[in-house]
Amino acid sequence: MSQHNYDPILQEIIEITGKDPAKCYQCGKCSAGCPIRDYEDVPPNRVIRYIQLGMYDKALSSSTIWMCAGCLTCSSRCPNDFEPAKLMDALRQIAIKKNIQPADKKVQKFHRAFLDQIKANGRSYELGLVAEYKLLTGALMQDVDVAPTMFLKGKIGILPNRIKNKDKVRKIFKNFEEEGK
Ligand code: SF4
Ligand code: SF4
Image (cartoon, rainbow, N blue to C red; front, side, top):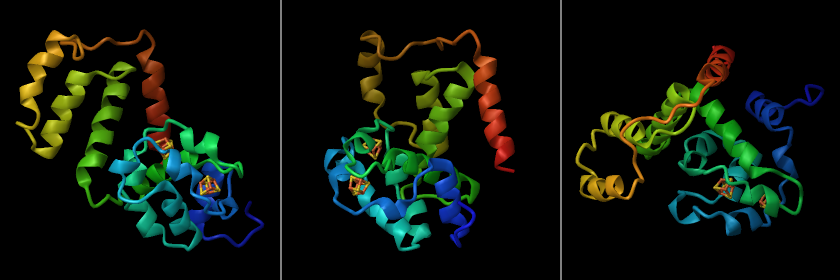
């Protein structure tokens, strides 16, 4: 890729994803199938368009890249073999490295709290996630009324259900953190 005179951010995107955003012809099929479209600030194809136009700050500060659930629907629907899900992942990595936050900062804090649970337990631990999210955002009383029902229905466990080899997961995080330095 380095034989092209790409902008460094574009080059990094291509290196992480293995795909050139110029490939996208803006048909919108990815956005039409995205299950969280109602919660994103801009549709996924517009994030790609920002990249094509060199509007990196717009893409990197979009809450869409943090709302993305990584379901791969967009990638499977793309008729041109571009993979928006990989792009969302790459943009999150670059946004963290550049310390760029979305307008709605809560969505990035949720992401941080989720990853901290994976790092600590090797899998998601909902009670820890909720507690950390509330501490990070200060929204201590938000949705507390639904907590008893969730406990009773077994949706939230009291203790984390850790995996056996959680050290391997921590190593993945450590490698990523060292790469970003
Ligand atoms: S489906 Fe593919 S080509 Fe169409 S807008 Fe999305 S990424 Fe671009
Ligand atoms: S991977 Fe992300 S952007 Fe793609 S369809 Fe799923 S939630 Fe939407």
